Length: 417
Image (cartoon, rainbow, N blue to C red; front, side):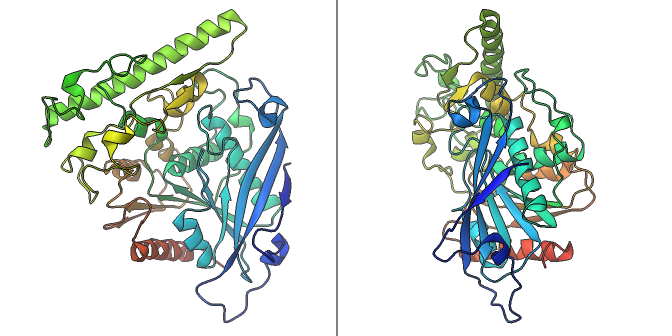
């Protein structure tokens, strides 16, 4: 069992038991809330220390999270936001949900704000520790996973493994048995502004013009859409888009093949167990330059990080720094276990609310229909919010519309008190 530590967040923050006290009959619809820091600690044997630090080398995992508790509001339902590497406590949606009177946990994984060595199978285990803690220690009767952005595919992966576990090893071949983890299933899943998976999203953003991974300046002009001399310019024809997409997949596969070969060579050597590497130019997509490719309401010549021509070469792009094992677990198109449609098809008995932001500048327009078609549960609801961008920046009315859909769905399923 994990050990939980909590402390005061805002001035005068209540304890967990105090935070769950009975709400007054005339409680307002807009609630002030308290942020309560939470630390979960649990022992885990270390087969391979993929990161430096106490939590990986000494056999103890430490998870740092934050509860958002509306003041004076009782609830036996907890909504959990969790992203593989990012922290969620400052996102607009969890704040809005707490202000509406819902109890929210922004749960952290063992890889906060650093995905260079992240193993998705271990993140799923971390999520299970949060769900178990919420029920067995904090006393919540129902737990809902809110998968925002990269948390969407994580939530589907987790729930699929909780309903019917299959994973015994990571894609690198390391033993990590989720079939024996007894992951407690959540009572519902909200898939919101979310993509298919980290692996599929990265692949659709990889620059296929890179001819040499060790020298990113060596490029194939016919695929370098950011070069003014590229023979293909918007609007792109279907044949070029198909060729571009296939070249992206082939680049991902070349890196994955190299990662597997390198791991095998390191294992034979018996000393070096892991290796880090750089993946250049990972923010390149024909959709960002041509609004007619998978059209939605997004802004042209723009992505959620800014000008794609700039961020493609920047030091902070997606998957820029990785380890061999991490690449195979979270970024490999063929080897990652967290591909969204595969896991959606294995969720058979959990209610799912799927919300697509129609002007999303991070999630491709093709992703949500794939998830919608793949979900096996008969209790699924799909909502599209016209004009909504990924983070609802400057769109408070659209964010409130999203919140209203969540509240109505929660009421129908008795996920509110």
